[in-house]
Length: 283
Image: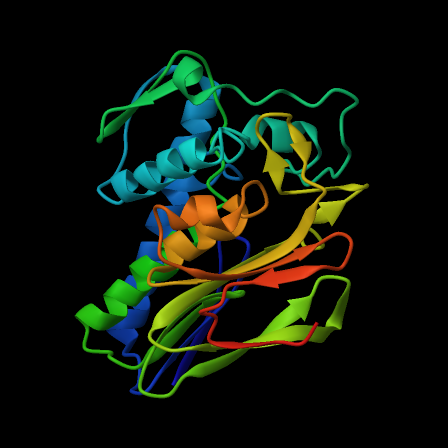
């Protein structure tokens, strides 16, 4: 059975070997709403919106530590290039609440984590208003949270697809095409996903007026060298975060902390991939 819905600005599909009950569908809807009400920078009533309006101490729900801890690890592993504090910069580049898509002449710089905020495991303390953006790993984390709900209600074989952020469980592998960022009608390869998660990121998605959404927090500007990444890992939040981190650092540096497989495509057309990759790359 399939359950389709719109959430956090994109399309979702959940496939399961057994029917999804109306009760579980309602719980999924509630979980999505709770997540969005905490993390969205596009709605006035979210916790992130409050943090953007005034400094203070803000207590987060129980899901937050895992996400903040991953961001801190990636922040350090990329020498501060990947940061959840890029929200204001994205807004001034035109990726704002009204989707103006008009970049300012001088985009706002990204504040340093240690200068702007501190996290104690339960609450975020800010010294000035900051705009959080957890787009580098947040959608993947929501995939995991919905998968946990499915498993809690007895679903052992399923696929959660958050517009390309995938978590698959089942005896048969899921064959996933790797979309060519320069021609979305083509694929540069195939990955066979077995009991794991896969996420991708590409600069042709959420691109406008010569800029895109993958921001180097050390410069406040969109990246240029890498144009697409794909990561397979045991959890979707890690796969999602690493798919962004690979725009900034070499895979070997991330492999010191994380177990994953990857494909990267560069602006000059080169493609690199891990030796353990379960699949095939065509170029």
